[in-house]
Length: 324
Image 1 (cartoon, rainbow, N blue to C red):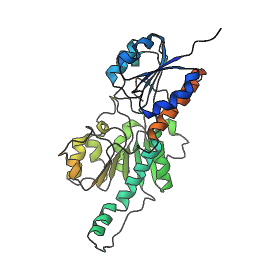
Image 2 (cartoon, helix red, strand yellow; image 1 turned 30 degrees about the vertical axis):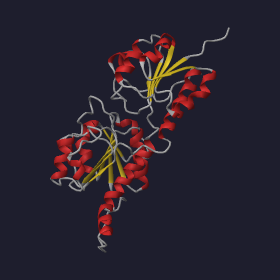
Image 3 (tube, rainbow, N blue to C red; image 1 turned 60 degrees about the horizontal axis):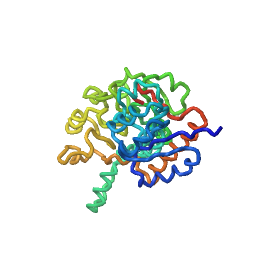
Image 4 (tube, rainbow, N blue to C red; image 1 turned 180 degrees about the horizontal axis):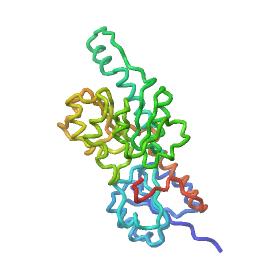
């Protein structure tokens, strides 16, 4: 007897170029691609897997509730704060994400931010523009401390480059014992030691996902614990940091500066104080936008489909109640 191929629903515009990477799967997977509920509705009763490529939470929820046979949901994004809804969280359906696909580029952004402040690149550019020959001292990264808030895949990518720069690495995570023996980590701290990490670090990297527990985690008290020479780098989610508290600290020169790839509101509104701050390095949430980043996300998903069809353990299964 010939087995029925699994049905994959893809929430996306069929014209998106990455859809071509799904074509080799069609020999053994039925694929239905559409950007709306109506476009995929007929296939939902038979749906086995769902790829959330470009869709909002409301649409994903509608699709999920109409797919009683669903056995797997995958999110193109690494962060899940804009996707999770109660029915998905409470269900036994596994959810995977693209964690790890974008980490290397984010780690490079963090390393660049460290060097940007350590070598005072803004001063070099100002002097070059003014044709001014002014010698000054710069900092070494060797011997400095990087504290990483949220030591997941992105955090590890940051730690790897920090180690190459001769830095000491402190990692803050829910279960610090999981970093025992990690050659990239000098010391792992539990979440209750956030202020200690902030105080001991020359560069604080926020790489935590946005969950109810992490929203506003880096608040005014945490920022106040930082060294006056400290730099705060955020490659996680904007709302993990209390943005008004950070603005206040920067305006008072209570810390040296910040490098930000993510913000509470995106795009950053006109007139926001960050725009005019020389001590802030800003990226418009593009630190992981490499030439192949979207293709890489689809290739990762295709590899997971291969595992799914063979009945193997899926990669990147998240703990839905934790949000990562």
